[in-house]
Picture 1 (cartoon, rainbow, N blue to C red):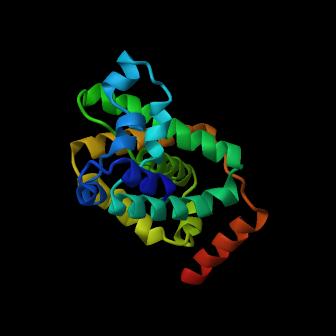
Picture 2 (picture 1 turned 90 degrees about the vertical axis):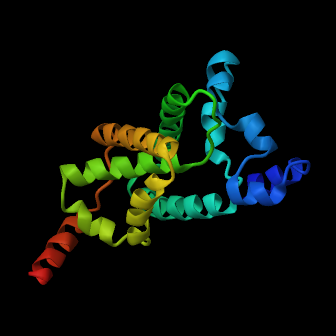
Length: 196
């Protein structure tokens, strides 16, 4: 939210209404990632900073809610350092995939990192289907399902970064282990029994 407001203040010479509705602005120019900034100017920090920029109000709201719902679950099953690693791995790999595919465009937003987390959770589900009972109890479970589907219809560039983040998460899910509480198995078995 702070970066959102800072971008508006710094972008006074821009049309601020258009920035709020569609994005852009001074901070995007300085911290967003593009092919030139990454591979010609070697500003490698941009492969992370772009993930903290959300100049459009709807973009900020949708991603903040998805990140909050995903984080509520991940904080229960992973150490914070692991969450930070997964989050930033999703940002870095997605930025490289994006700028190699779309040379002349700037990229910003946290959705690649969120999709990385969701991809990791999907790998856990594939490895152990009983995890679905845990996921259904996540606050915002239906929102996250809608987010994963609807947000991919925003354009080819959006689809590419989401796919790159999701695939990164799928691979990380093979090596990142979640903490399992002893009573989760009993709880999910009990729920399954009650449904039958």
